[in-house]
Image (cartoon, rainbow, N blue to C red; front, side, top):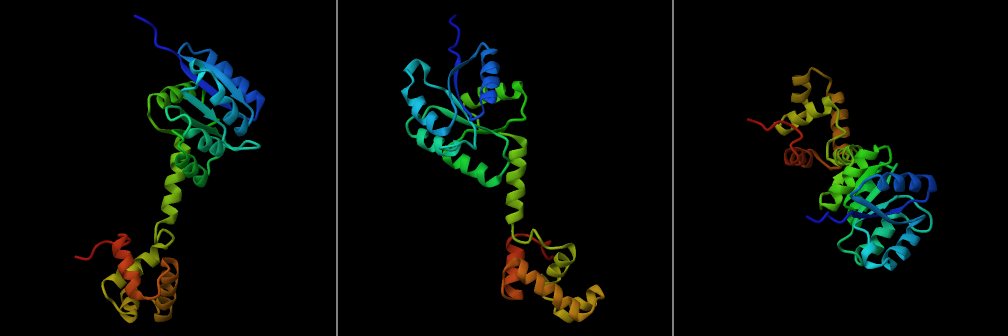
Length: 219
């Protein structure tokens, strides 16, 4: 039974010591083979397509922030030329906008440089197998970013309490009586609610609250 061909890996990173460490790590694995390296995205775009067929990479480890051309720009330039190659971002940056850009450019994974050698090796294998892999920190950043953009995510508990009463159709005076607070305080809170929800009136606020389930449904 013949041994499976090693996974061919190309490294693009502008730090020579990082590249050296990655090459050393890859060389230590029997099923991985380093087929080349580049110090910036433009060199990667130039070098990778010029490699002979037997050294065309299966997986490209791509630093995000590099001079001349960044990792995302390099992926965009290479993706159409190498549809079967997987691109794995390896970076220290956890920024939701950059993570989204990387995914849209065609990256199959997003890993942080604080990952252990074994974690990186496993991710290379998983990426080569066709699985998308995200560092837990990157996933958390994307979730937090999505939650921050969700309507009503910045409402205080008191404002949510008032919004729930608004959905029940209570007037300002009835809300004041229900919560045992002054009428001007109710009006102040409602003004803040409308501003945070970016709506013009109570009706729009109630409709948005119900649509996005910001308050419990009325019985």
